Length: 295
Image (cartoon, rainbow, N blue to C red; front, side):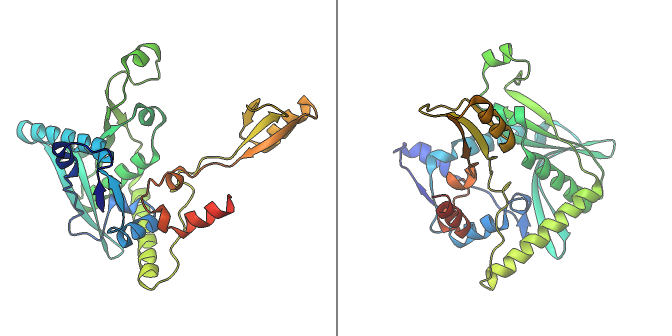
């Protein structure tokens, strides 16, 4: 991937934000790639030399790496029964999966798995399904590779946009800029089945890619698809009177208001695609096709 400096940041900043030590090790696929859409992974590999990313977009991932490094130094030197920054490998259906676990704490023969995140307060308030999936995959790897039970899963979240005033005013707002989020743990069988099914899905996609076949489409969840809504509108009025998530409710509401009212369908945006968060939208036939249909 080629890094740009659209905002003309100083060289010292560019150098700091350009550092990338990521490696999946001697594995066929990492947990990060495993839980992502096969199509995205394949297109990113195909077009890596053509992809561009502005260096300024690396700022929060660099903050995250620095926070990881600080905690790694402290845990490695001062605590027993703690394993910091370990990449674990396990086999599934002929492929090697790897996952880099930020922190493992051994308590009475059981493992507590923690992952560090530099994220938004919104992510903690509303939760992120991919956190649950990621950490349960790590739990599956620990069970398979180490033959040890997993006791607990958690996110240690540093909130980059935390606001003291909101914490004072709202009980549901995180009360500290560093927050621990407990993650629901799947059963051992659920984690194993998920890993196995995802490996098979990526293997199938890899075969299609190698034989010039058809790549699997990204799911609505993988495209961050928002729900379609139905706005009750009034003639000659710009703003909606009310927005409904159920079409029948919107129709009933509009009908009760009289003949000058009507329904405006608002298709839910696939945010990941429309804002190119995957980085490969311009090479994606699915995005191009759905964009044409929406015109």
